[in-house]
Image 1: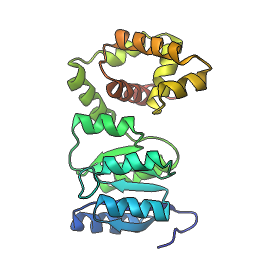
Image 2: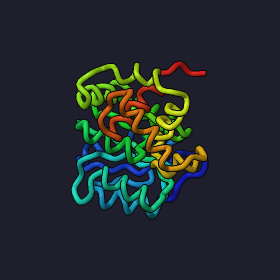
Image 3: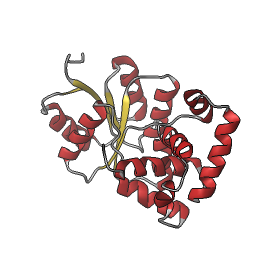
Image 4: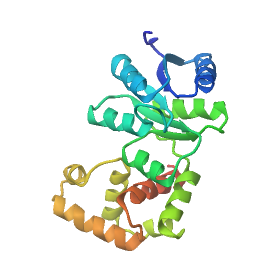
Length: 220
């Protein structure tokens, strides 16, 4: 199926046929959205992404062949322009940290209203992320055993916060160094200080914390 010009093109992948058809029907009827492929596993989904180059792929996490997270990794490795949203029945903390670290654009649980999925798709299409802060914050709390890490971000220096937010964009230390005109070793020193000040023990949790902080920070 060809992409309709002027519309947000979507590839959907889920191994539950009834759910897949239902979501495709609802999204296909929404003005401005065009479902270009419906796939029943990760391998088929990846093939459709490669061939059709949709604006957005909506994937389940657990699928036969390739998981949604594995599809996301290939999308990253091949530098495909498609943005990835996960629609899943449940997500472990590791799932949440992994999809954030690998640059997923959105995450929704399947019990969310379809209207929220439409909102998520349109927001992601505009270049924003849609990662519910309550899911992220809960995962961080379980990872760290405390709720204080977002407050501690306020205590970081300006340069440390700048690095943290670039980390939240999914950049590696080398890319952050290039963006800021710093030596990579300097970025590593700042990263060490960020870990110490926030008490967050892992890079994945730190990325999640950065995104949660930016989500709750007043706009403007």
